Amino acid sequence: MRLRLLAFLALAAPAATLLPLREALACGGCFAPPTETTVVNAHRMVLSVSPVQSVLWDQIQYAGDPSEFAWVLPVKRGATLEVGSDAWFETLDAATSVRITAPNINCGGSGGGCGALARSASDSAGGEAFGGNEQVTVLHRGTVGPYETATLATDAPGALNRWLDDNGFGVDDSTQPVIDAYVRENFDFIALKLQPGKDVKEMKPVRVVIPGASAALPLRMVAAGTGANVAITLFTISESRLAPEGFAAAAIPHDLLAWDFAAQDSNYGELREKALAAADGGRAFLTPYAQQGSLFSPVSSSAAPFGVQYTTSGSTTPVDTIAAAFAQQGLANGETQDTACAVRFAGLAAEGRVVASPCPAGVPLSDPSCGEVPSGQIDARELACGPLDDLAVAMIGLHPKDVWLTRLEANLPRAALDTDLVLSPGPQARVDNWLRARVSVRAQVVCGAATPVTLDGDRASRSRGQGTLVGVTLGALALALAAAVARRGARRFASRPA
Image (cartoon, rainbow, N blue to C red; front, side, top):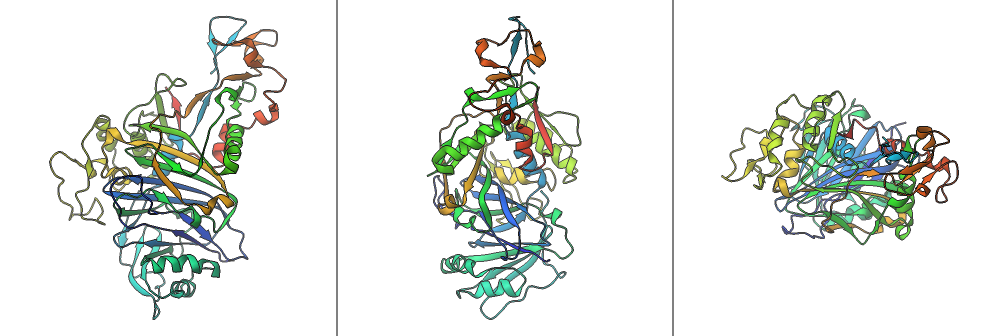
């Protein structure tokens, strides 16, 4: 059976250069014919916001095996469509995921503790041609990575829905009011779908760039095609720690964070699930990670006091910054052959100059037409690893030493998707993703059944044996953090303390 899956991403007009702003940048909603079983169950997005430009990377995770995947993006004039790299999402996801370390325990009161993106855009003569009609104008056809693309314009209500249906995009009638609203607001549209013969595994993250600053995502578009809940992971890159407006701030009760020494895992996944569900009926976001300067600087925490190091797939050599891990992951993926860019990143930790693009708007950093940046600015090409340029594009208009990387997570019920997500500067406080458990469970497997167990600097009552733990069964405690992470997709690299 041929499945058509349609995603909508709304892209705003250029706006003012200061946050907060209310224009919607981009977000995805998926539509499939009622006879199909595909359901979107997660969105991963990266949003970079500077006074110069706003960039959104979007990657949809879904249940099903479609032979055709199609997106339609309402865009204002000046927006450009590009393809991101797998390494970009893999690196940000793994580097900012929560890691739990075991508490330091004392056996018998002794003093010693134990615990242990490539881009291509050109006119295409291959593939099936997109046809126009009397009310829809095809402004441009081309290819971007594995996708066929068409830029469309219309001022007739309902015309775009007919065009999409005629050209193999399965759009049901319920989408017409949404599309017509963008038509009335003078949006053009970019339609893209996989080229014939491309496997679904080749679906790359889509990157959309527009001039100006915008920090809002229209969650109302996400409602279509989702199940009862949709998991959202959003990474923000800006010179402020950004936080959602109008949504509750979920918090993990760290005092209940337990480590089961027999199962070698924690109850973090269960605590996270309950925290998100309990805050305002699930209309909540959790901030498990927020660090200023962490893209280019080493980080440490109380649970990893000697610094966090990252080891990527295909390499046994750890690196100590996210930028270096991105370069290393790109090499492992075969998305770049540039082995020297990680060295260039090393000098950016304290850099106060702004990153600037030497290219005209919409022109790739690798294009020969690009010139030079003014004196006193950083050429964005210095941050590119050959074709692997996501970090370079994300940093345009920003000062490296001032940049915050923030991770936001939600598991929103469908009813919560009635309000757009507006981001604005929140508490400028650091949030560590490395956490040490406060409670030990079944520590006797380390110390011996007859040996009293205490935590370093804590009371013996904080250690639990075979009984219940604050009303949570040991069976629930056996929910591994690794399993919770695996539900969000296979990790291509892991981070660990030095």
